[in-house]
Image 1 (cartoon, rainbow, N blue to C red):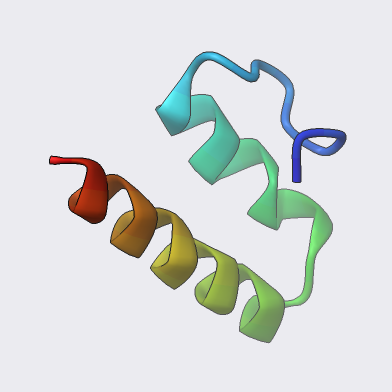
Image 2: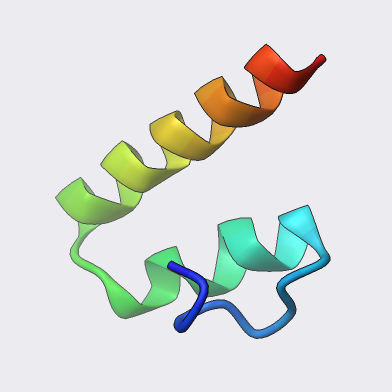
Length: 42
């Protein structure tokens, strides 16, 4: 995922740019994982 993201330090950019290069199913799966990961950090 790091290689696809435009800005590694910006969560919003990672969430937007990474799924743009995936199928809809992959994008939903990755978005769920990103949300779960950041939820666990808080």
